[in-house]
Length: 489
Image (cartoon, rainbow, N blue to C red; front, side, top):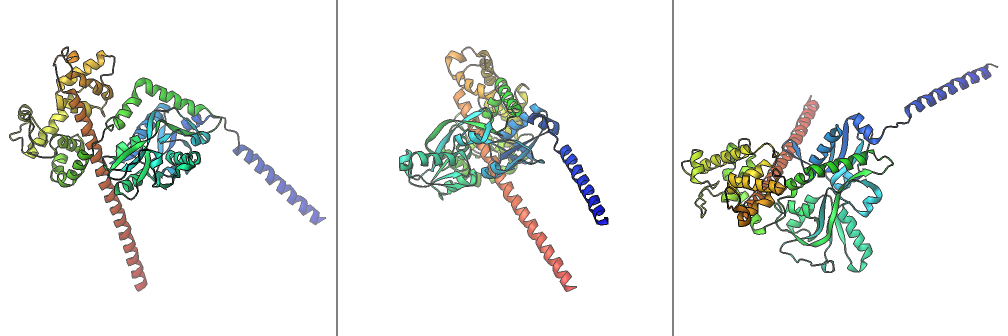
């Protein structure tokens, strides 16, 4: 009887524990009726996956930048939440990284194109710009004119749309006998192609253009696909709230012209490439720039010293005694009136020239109206540096009369060349100006500026790695010494 009673008590306790567990479990698993957008806004954070790259996201100094970063920051502000980026070094790792409770990934943004495979796996936002898919070869090697002439392996970034494209070619055209190999990221891809370690690769036209100024032997063989849509990727589900917010955001971007400004900022100056000029520039970065870098840093003021150096290279190729047919001279190619305004006694004195050129460019930037965005003011000022502030004002007025946005460099740079056509300049206040030259002048400086920023980032990265290795070695050495002291004691 006692045994039966003991078993009955045990059964009651066990039943109670199970009942309580079910009740608690039911409370924990209570259905959450909030939409995905409501969850993001309630948490106050937008979690996004991306990859490091010049058009996606990178740190310049301690400041985040990149087209995708700026766009995502605007989207998070639009939602009224904080942007939390989760950057990866490879596309494969980014795509495979899963969402967690602490890291609820809302979308992926990394210059990703719409493909058939991705359409089956993800929900996609609207296209916000388009790219071309190119076969790339190394200048100086045999250039294939079509796929039938391709005999070497084609290298692509792992898990990219380009890998998917080659796989489709292999399925649809087995007679081509195409082979491909993968590398983890674009920089490894391009650097190996530049070094001649590989012969062929596939990349988008925007990526090629951005990397040609560091890897000048890269060149387009031919276009594989045109007008590929770049989109954000989201998980497939029955919740439309986030996708609707993305659609509304991009619609607003188009209406306000913000998307156009971002495209111009990152891609507006990379449509042309001069192999000889780039090779010359890269050589002079090694041979000439170290002589004058200190001056650019010293007199840059609020300007980026690398922008000042890029202007000087465009003007004189960093030659203090440079002279133009029009009589301007020195590192910054100053006219005598400008030189006198800023206290220059000798235009061929490198220090005086850099100091005055920097002050003059800063003055032009400060003269510009605040209706022009801060990141575009330097391009307007550079045009004025080249053709004169008055001619720039004429170009802005023509842009406005034609129904354009006189505060947008993308639109004004299309109008400046009209200043050399009688049909237009005879109605302006200040008349003829070499507009085509001014637009090319600004474009060249932006390319040199991008290259100098890249070189600077590489140096900083190398120094950081060296510091990290030094710290690690030092720490291990101290640990070994401590261990020896303990053993000796």
